[in-house]
Image (tube, rainbow, N blue to C red; front, side, top):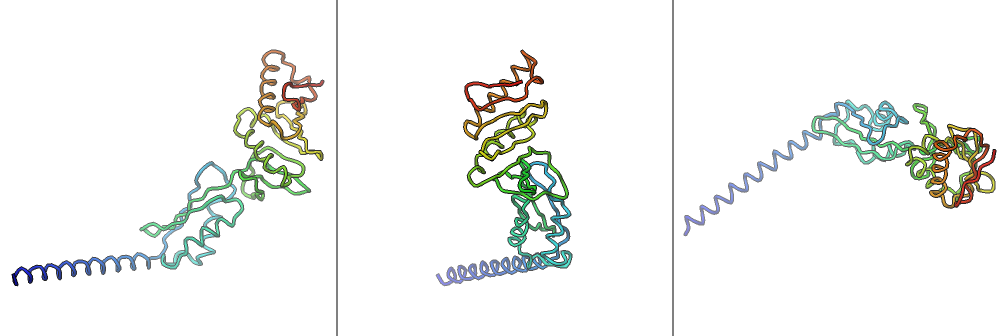
Length: 245
């Protein structure tokens, strides 16, 4: 019985020693890994192909926040703070920062999408996918629908819904070039292919009016071939399209 007890006790000691050794090796490896210097900064743009910010912009911002990147150890790099700093840029929608085992600091960036370019009160902005205003980028000018007039708290959501409907439709996205928000809240649009005005009315029945416009253009092109003769296309009446020459 005593031999069995001693054998079990010795087995426990050996297991404890193994655990201590494993823990020591892991701790040493972890400390060594954290003390290694950052070797490079790798920037990868995710999502759709926009160029409002460049890889160099991102690298400069990262270097500014971690001083000299070649001399900074991983243990003192605040990744969450770096992500927050990147999100301060009004052209960036999301960012993820992480460090690989070989010492590369990777930055994944999702840029905002511009649905339209707004000209209002002598200033110009992009309207992003959440209805917010983006500054104009010095690196890239996106081809976008032009919006003129006042964008208010009351009409901002309706305008964004309309812009998304237009952007989701290939024909409308290519055909419509501008939207003017009049003082009375009604909309006037312009076509890329023709000189007529599109009298859209208010934001009510947006989808139906756009579908009516598409059907009218399709019919006029294939059957009548008279689009060039019209001065205005009135979509205010959802049951019909009224044209004037």
